Amino acid sequence: MKKAIKGLALLVAFLILVVTGYIGTSFVTARMSSLIHSEWVDLANTEKTETIYLITGTLHADFVIPATLVDKAQFGFLNETKLPLNHPNLRNVAFGWGSKAFYTTAGSYSDITVSAVLKAVTGDQSVMRVVAFGDIDTAAPDVISLAVSKEQLAALLQFLHGSFDQSSSGKPQYLPQASIGQNDVFYEGVGNFNIFHPCNQWVNSGLRKIGIEVGQWTPTTHSLRHSLEYFKSVKLN
Image (cartoon, rainbow, N blue to C red; front, side):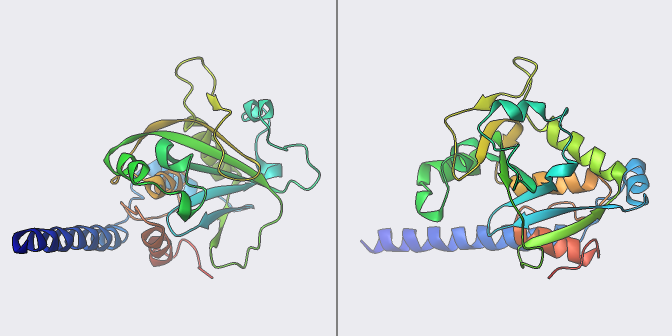
């Protein structure tokens, strides 16, 4: 019995050490600039005329694009879904990337299962989630406003479009049965999700590719926000 208790205590201590190391490392790498490619720097220096957003939750961040800025031809495939893209109150469209097992089932914390968490941690096929909704409170603490140029916007839309898996039929693969909320749809995504390349690192990649300075590795929303503030890419609420 004593050996079992000691073994459990060692396991708990090990897990605490791993989690602490993971989070601590994420804040160190959040301060290592990744804005190193010349084309990203060129984009960073273009004139800012548009505003897009990041919405950051406890675990996950989404890109949010005003509906009027979403290229209707580029994302025309969304019209084949249940999304209310022609609704008069449509104002914004959110794009997120994540683990198929976790993201398509965890609408709230009570929905989280051990098997979905293990799948996400060890490696899982990715999915893209698209959500259509109305106005957002830009002063809310979980909303980050990003000033971008038309060139940066075009580069971001290309990044988002390229995150939908189109390998099997030449068009994004819609998952009609998947949903975790109102006015959302899921598609097969490009790339694998795992603990070292989670959803927030996907957001990191999108930011880098449009010339917004951010750290090398920001796997949590906290390290992502810290990085953006550290490099003065945004002024957080």
